[in-house]
Image 1 (tube, rainbow, N blue to C red):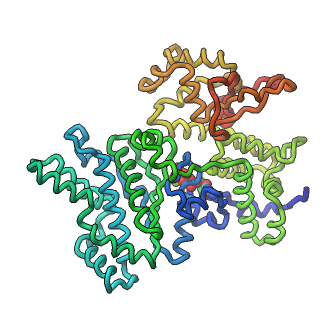
Image 2 (cartoon, helix red, strand yellow; image 1 turned 30 degrees about the horizontal axis):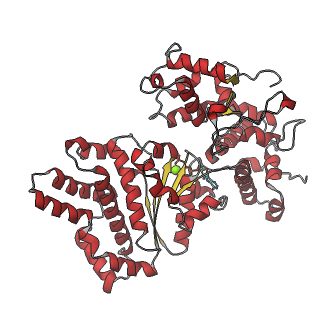
Image 3 (cartoon, rainbow, N blue to C red; image 1 turned 135 degrees about the vertical axis):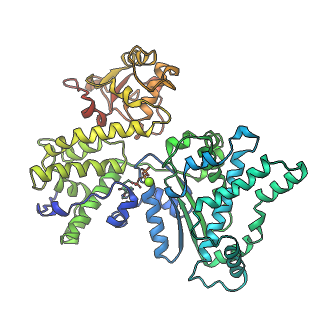
Length: 505
Ligand SMILES: Nc1ncnc2c1ncn2[C@@H]1O[C@H](COP(=O)(O)OP(=O)(O)OP(=O)(O)O)[C@@H](O)[C@H]1O
Ligand SMILES: [Mg+2]
């Protein structure tokens, strides 16, 4: 295989990117962007709801879609964390049990109202000369009703919700109540403007991206109604015109935490795109970063483009001595749950550690080992934090594996899980879920969170003593976990927890 030799000077400029896409977009994300099939399905409008784990690249797709839309002269509206505050919603809105006011429907109507108002505001902005016909009508409506530019976007939604709530729960005579509510649900205030809006959209494309819905998530009634209502509104608004697209991103666990969404799964199934990565696409991501950094430092673009992804990797990370050519990449990727943020962080930590100790290229294989402990600790704590609403105290459950062997037969693992469930091995803050699990249920949770890998039945090759490949939840869509007989702690968690590998295994 051809070699690529990079001067150690590159070390100073080598950059694997910022850990989140919002900051990465200013650090070369668009040039290093891996264009997956998921990206194309989203950008074409075929899929409008993006599901993925933390750090899987939801914002990256939205950032690149937004940038490319703007470059093409189209309008983009980005709704981000400061625009929603679940705490505020909870303290402002009456609880569902204060009267049957069908929160989801109310939130859906309020979201539709907000989305249409945002689009109209965008096209009525200065610079768009809408002085005639439909445009003028929209301009007039925005000027008369939403002139207060200081008002946050969420306040438009909250005030609409308040209008609904006041009628639902207020002392109004029944007939009038129905009429008023009907008017609000049908968005009567802006309904007559929609045909005009469609005309404007014939010539002007508008994209709305709603990202980071999980920031500040508190799993409350209002938070769930807020997101479920947004899903419903998204379907309606996307049907208005092909040039108007609303995109939502959501973390997978959050989607699973909202019964209104997965119970209605068939309504949304055709809109959902789940982000998945493979070893090859993660290698491509890092290789793109290496080529980009080297090019910025003056390296010949043609030489870099001729080098394949693994060659680029090996120019920075030396292969495992005496091991296969992709040894160091395998070592790193095996310690991820196939999320780009993980590999970016691992590579960045290796680089930082090595810069201080041996500023040569390729970085020695030991540099990966030096960085592993810190990376493993961070990831273990982050994964536990990711599931803090569903499984509080999960870190304490991970800790129970500290110092143990990395591999378990099912029966052995069941016994350990039984001790955990019964509280014979004490853990803290787990009382809301752990005592209600059975051992197999706990195994399922540890598998779902990525902590355990499993050996699929039928993969046990007698030639290697029945030790076939162990795979994680990030590598398969379906696995009959009940039939699995052997499990391992995922390598990402091992360095921090001091989980040992049995000799020869
Ligand atoms: N397709 C891609 N090509 C290149 N880099 C990517 C791609 N997807 C993600 N990345 C990079 O991976 C990192 C994590 O991605 P991102 O911030 O989009 O994750 P996320 O799913 O939005 O995470 P969170 O749930 O925390 O918001 C960022 O540095 C981002 O630039
Ligand atoms: Mg994000």
